[in-house]
Image (cartoon, rainbow over all chains, first blue to last red; front, side, top):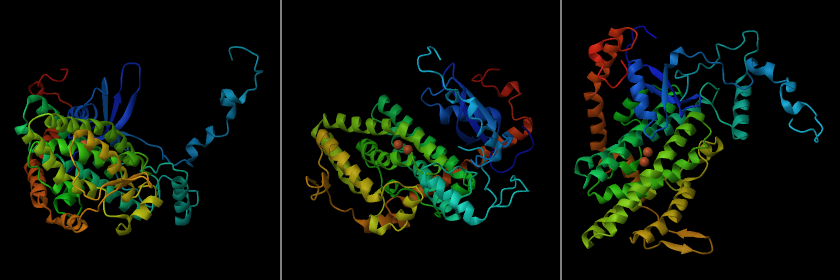
Length: 98
Length: 344
Ligand SMILES: [Fe+2]
Ligand SMILES: [Fe+2]
């Protein structure tokens, strides 16, 4: 992430791994002048009580987002494929381990 | 709190150009449907201008309250009676700074910048909670603020975890998780003093006497003098009226006061068995309006202090930016700058 910045410190998104074995999860955002300070600020703002074992920060401007709008056609293809779910299939109740 | 900090243009530039642009009425209907099923509005969703304005005002006021709220307690950090109390007070004040930052991030998703928010606070165009315009006169106030002021804040904030604007609700969830410590440390401090000397007990009572009525004012004016409440509730921004929350606070606090051994300074405070709730007197609403209009005991001092911190921090913000620009990638590639706290 580069390019000269002027004015307000850029916005970063913060992801924290709560403990080993879990994914990093988005916890919020903050402003920082650079990546290293973003990490330090993230530690102070989002992990004051052992909330994490690992932090990722990324410039918000580096994220490409779909529209969260639920009618977005991006998600339409998965809407009508009920056969992708196990509940679609009728199995007699006395068949074990299914 | 969100990936998007810029104001959303009215027409979505990413929309399929072949698709008919939605009419204002269709957008409004979809917004209302989300509200009706108690789902959340997210920053990139279309929302009515008035909803956005209401949220900017409310979230900003909330953020400013956390930031200004550091001052009445911060001024006692250097005079804490023990290392234990000092560490606790430091941690609490640091939490309030964090709360302010969570909330500023939420406000920014509505299309207002951090700098604009700070400037609106400093210039008096946006408000903060009137409670922080009262002075802190003794260390007992550190206990009373935790018990009553954070207690009232918790009453206000717990229902806001389900507010209709996603980033605001998520900020409130984080904040509520941390507030319980604030209230308990305050109550414990007061309980410790109540087990002390007569003089200490008198300090606690005097402090409670001063903070009781301003704490009740934290819930805002009575419902019949709160014209915006109906619209805020229709939008799911608020879920309870000011008077409902005030009643809840009084009912929760009375037994706590009894356990502590202090009296609450309200001759009209009495259990009403018929209502299953306490009757209580009304705060002096003229006082609330005077404080809101800037004439509380500490308004000028609080804003001046914030302005001084902002002005005196300008060179730090600029220097950090100059350093980031100088190193190009924004990563620390100069050995001299590694202070050993980060892996080399
Ligand atoms: Fe707070
Ligand atoms: Fe608090």
